[in-house]
Length: 244
Image (cartoon, rainbow, N blue to C red; front, side, top):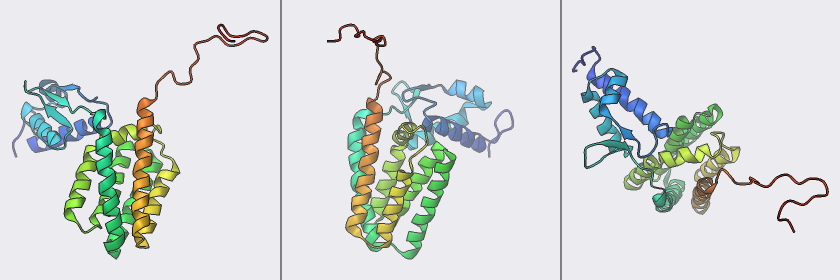
């Protein structure tokens, strides 16, 4: 494996840059549309530009960075206008995969779904946002795997990957302290799959997606002046200016 000037193996260096930039992008420390300068990143990590480029290629394959026509690289924009279409697609694929999982899952696949849910609960307790995003993904992927349809499961996985930053904003609306009902909804879905209740499993998957969508949109519409009064406080026996 090629050595960098300071003795680091290039493959290891590329992995290190990838991991750090990926975390910063998913945490929104690096904001959508922010420029990523290879020279600056190289100096920060003490590496040549080759491993930085390798890291960028890997991030681009995940849709996290974008190369512009002028060859500059930026953090991929987060297109809020596409959220409705995105959430519709995720809702539909999770409804059908959850229904199929209730019909076709094996005992081993059911155990895997339960294991993924236990991991998600642990990340909730730790308030680790990135770990919550990852474990939530694995929970829903385990369900789609149990649908016995590789194409649907692959599509579900891709949608979950593309929506990681949306989910990060969603968790921020709770200050990364998710209510117990979020995990309880997962448990209800598991119970329906275990009991092979196809209609109920699909309904619960849809309700879960709808609640996340509504909360996310409410968070986006919230402003810093909600509930703020710019009028002076009312004194005893005195109306506020303009009051009738």
